[in-house]
Amino acid sequence: MPTASSLKAVILAGGYGKRLRPLTDERPKPMVEVGGRPIVEWQILWLKRFGIKSFIFLTGYKREVLIDWVSRNAERLGISYMFLTENEPLGTGGAVKRIRDFINEDFLVLNGDVITDLNVEKLRVKDGEVAALALVPLRSPYGIVYIEDGKVKAFIEKPVLKEYWINAGVYRFTPKIFEYLPDKGDIERTTFPTLAQRGLLGGVQFAEAYWRSIDTMKDLEEASNEVLEVFKNSPSL
Image (cartoon, rainbow, N blue to C red):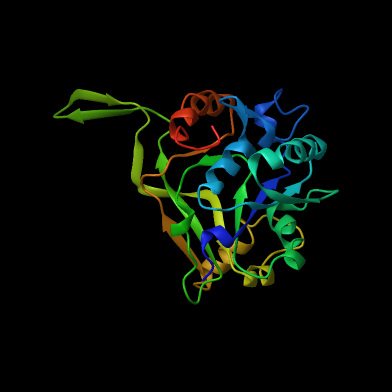
């Protein structure tokens, strides 16, 4: 099985990021800055920790902004790259299917709005599986009130609910995934349910990993206060 350092990383970077407007009026979501750097730069810094230096960017909305930034910063970041552009929205499944001629071994796919430090070395596909999903604990969007004998004892601000797991938007695929991808449609709604029903989809739990999906202005504000601490030991900072 290939080690993480030999994998290509495919970044889904074609989304509109409507809930982050006006920040996404003139740029794609992965180019929104968090803690002074675009989301995509945090992703590259994270994956380089594991020796991953080859990237494929699946672009769409405002693609010229991402293409320009990657082209100007690739040498500084020490990465190789290519772009594939969709002229009409194909969904995550349709977008990934277009890279089949460029991939002949396991590869990583990640949503372009995720910032994490999870250990991709542990994200492996077992024998008999086609894909594996990274799973992280659900963080409650609300504060929790702890009650004992009818008395309020404590307030817990947005706790991590470790008995519930969510899709982290980070995947490891084998080349067999292309047999299950739609020409148009989302992986989450088409491919994953089919693989799960057939016992071909693994799930790897990352209980202690940092993970943020940047969907709203509140996510952006909170993540901006966290990422510098999470990535403080990165040699590129």
